[in-house]
Structure formats: C-alpha cells, structure tokens
Image (cartoon, rainbow, N blue to C red; front, top):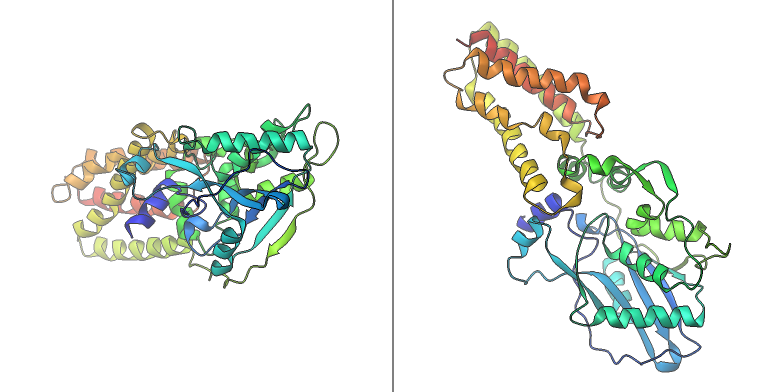
Length: 386
C-alpha cells in the first residue's frame, strides 16, 4: 500500500528495478553488430501501465548481446520515499543480457517489439561508446522526470546524439491538441480511471501545454510509433519497421468503475440527505467534517508538490482553486458555524465554476460533482449559521 501511494503521487516509473549483470564489454564492435530499440507493452501494475523502452546492442561476432536500461532504481537507497517525494531520486543506467531481459517479459506475459536502428558503422560505434561512458559509476545516475527525462527520452536522446550530419525532423514540430495529460489519459482509459483521477489532482497546468513531436516521445509506445513514421533530415528512415519479439499473453485488465459516476451518485445522496436534514432542522456536522477535510488534505499535498519538491509536472496546479486550505475555516467551526466561515469558501467554489472553462488547465470530470457537493453542504450550513 505504501509503495502504491508513492506511485500515485509521483508517477513512479515505467518498470520496476532490475539487477545489473556483470558483462565483459568489448572495446569496439564488429561489422556484424547492430543496435535496436526495444518497446515493451503495459504490465499489470500501475507503474507498468505506460510500457518501457530499452536499447539493445548485439554483436554476434563478439558473443555480445545486452540491453541498456535507463529505467532502474534502488528501493534500498537511503531515504528512498523522501527523495522520491522531493523529486530528487536517482535512477541509473543498468545492463542485463538480452535473453535475461526477454525472460522477464515472458514471465509477465508482456509484449516486446524491436526496431533495428539504421545507423552507419560510425554512428553505431559512437552510440556504443556513449553508452559505455554512461555506465561509469560517476555518470550512470540521473534525476528521473516522468515527462522529460525517463527510460524513453534517454534512449532517443542517446540515439539522436550519435547521428552524424543528420537529425530527427520532429524536434520542434508541435503535435496539434496533444498534451502530456492527454497522453496519460490515453493509457488510463478503462482499467485505471481512479489512478487517472489521482494523477489529475497532482498534475499542474504545465502538463496541458501542446507538445512537440520530440516531447511526445516520453511514452515508450508513442516513441515506437513516431520512429516508425519519422524521417531524418536526409529524408531517410532512422529505424526498420517494428518486429514482434514477444506476443502479449497477460489477461486484459478489467474495467474500473468510473469515479465520475461514483461522485455523481455521492452528490445525489448528499443532496437527498441535506434536504431531509433541512426539513428536520439538523446540521450534520459529521458529514461536513468528512467533506471539508478532503479538500484540506488535497490542498496540503498540492502545496507540498508545488513548492516543496523539484517535480516539474506538479507546479502551477490550479486544483488549489477548489481543493483549498480555506476549508479549514468551516472545518474548525463545525459546532459554531458563522456566516463568514461558510460564505467565503462558497464564493471560492462559485467563482471556480464560472472561470473553469477559461483556466489553462484541464480538470478531471469527477471534480464537478465534488465541487457541487461542497456547495450543497456550504449552503446548508448557511441556513443555520449564526
């Protein structure tokens, strides 16, 4: 449970950690060597839902076939959860044999696709040497960023840096109507709707900006698709067509109950309870304690991730406009309600509803019934405040 909470709050990772294996690395590659990008399908757990990207270097003449993996971390490192919460956790480049890599995904029943890179011998040698440099103890660690610096972006950056007198054509091309949040929603469309709600609550307005084609490559499967259609500045392809190494064999996830529908049902229930309480002249402080505590706790999380962490994606989170610490006021006045303790948060909620379409951030649809539920309770409290 503790690990799952951290995964939700901080969008943990594309894959769990794997153990690096000791290999003898040849100083150079033979003419038969090739490099390929491996794209792995989603897994069962949330942090595996977005797939994974790794880089394979194979040289049959050297009996060398390894996978370079930028998606590894160590749960045993000191202050793991604190460093992750602060956005300061180190990920690192690890290596395992190709066969061992495939065995892991066979065991999990996950699909694996391969795209061989169409590199010149000099470009392949450059890529290999850069990977060897990255493996050094002083270079292997990096500060993980789910959107801007992860297992997929590291691979494409390394490949792009190895290119000789040519470049990817989609570096600055803006993808119409595509944002970081949109891409997250694509991969949390049926079985992970509650995870999507949690993600939408902690992501800020930065995640609603249009992406360039290069930025869109932060998702492993999107990276594979873009490399399959993108051309280099020379007009040639960078990769061969994807080939299937492993078929997906895991059971498809079951569809989750919609949190939007759940909160609409809660709204209707609270509305009915409130009407009955109003008729009986009851104030229901226990119900207000439950509903007013929630935005206070969410606001504390938003403020911490905004100002107390290094996470790029959690800044400028406009959920603070409705999940506001101002609800601490009526929460502290449950037994002795005053007009001011209710009218101020009520004004906040009404203003939020009016300006919602104008805000530069997309909000989860479940927010609407939540806000309406808060408004119902504030209006009820105003009827008996003194």
